[in-house]
Length: 81
Image (cartoon, rainbow, N blue to C red; front, top):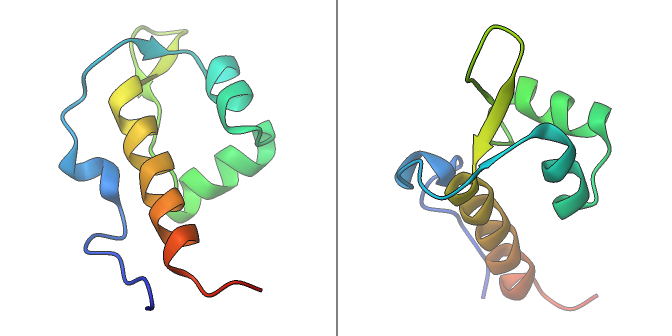
C-alpha cells in the first residue's frame, strides 16, 4: 500500500482553530530545528506562521495537528524498511 496524499498541503483543509502556537512551541512539539522549519515553510512543505502583530507570529494548533497527522499517515502507509 503506497501513500499518496490527497493534498500536498493538508493544513489548507483545516480551519485555523485551537491555540495559537508561538514558533518556539512549534519547534519543541515537532522536534525540528528553527532553520529546518523555516526552510520547509519556504518550500511550501510546512504550515506557515501567521503575523498576529507587528512583532509576533503564531501558528494555529489545528494546522500543526493536520501536518503531523499527514506525516503519521505517510509513515504508516510506507513499506517497512
